[in-house]
Length: 136
Image (cartoon, rainbow, N blue to C red; front, side):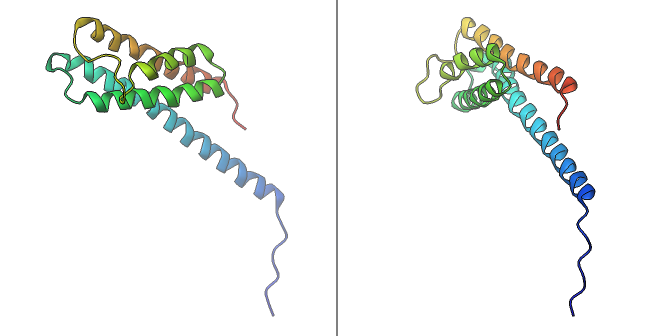
């Protein structure tokens, strides 16, 4: 004879589901921060190593373009259209397949420094939004 199953505990189930949602939200927030910090680090490294002519130009372009696209889509989801518009300009600017510019000259160093601003703004915006937002 098979043992009897215990009765379904709906409260325990709801607690378990809420715990899973919190865990997913924390993981999503951590991945979102990582997607924002990696292009910032790549651009900062480009600025620091500017005199060497940016030896890993293709990798930097790819990192910044991919980060811009990912953060742009998340900004649309979060309805922060100003950051999304800035990042929509950055993605084709740093296109690794068809480069718009080469990493040379003081002007493009300034462009790289200015390109950090949308990522930093989206990072700061997500941090302040996450503190006031109730995730359920």
